[in-house]
Structures are given as structure tokens and as C-alpha cells.
Image (tube, rainbow, N blue to C red):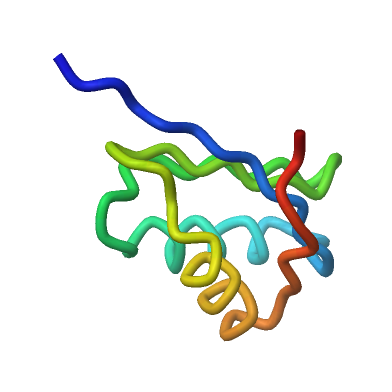
Length: 74
């Protein structure tokens, strides 16, 4: 049985449902990602996958989508 890894990031610039859908799509397309949760109220994105996500790759796709990953949430 494998254990899933969950990481939460703070993302700046999310304001609406379109933002939520965009980030869910672009992050969800990354290899190994099984689930993406976006919380507009807190500005957080939670990424779940079989292994810990590549922070640099997550930051890259978030930036390409027009948002800013400001760090991991403890």
C-alpha cells in the first residue's frame, strides 16, 4: 500500500472560480499529481500525489498560469 503525499502552497492572485479552475487544471496535469484542492478564501492550493511534488515545477506552472506561488504552508 502506498502513502499519498499532500503539500499545501500559498498562491497570490487567485480571485474567482476561473482562477480555481485554471490552477486545478494546470497543476493536475503534472506527473504524479492525483488531486488538487484550491481554496480561494485562504489563497491556498493543496496538491496530493504518490510522491512529494517538485516545488520548482509547481511554481513554474503556477507562474505560467499568471499567479504567484509564494511558498509552502506549514
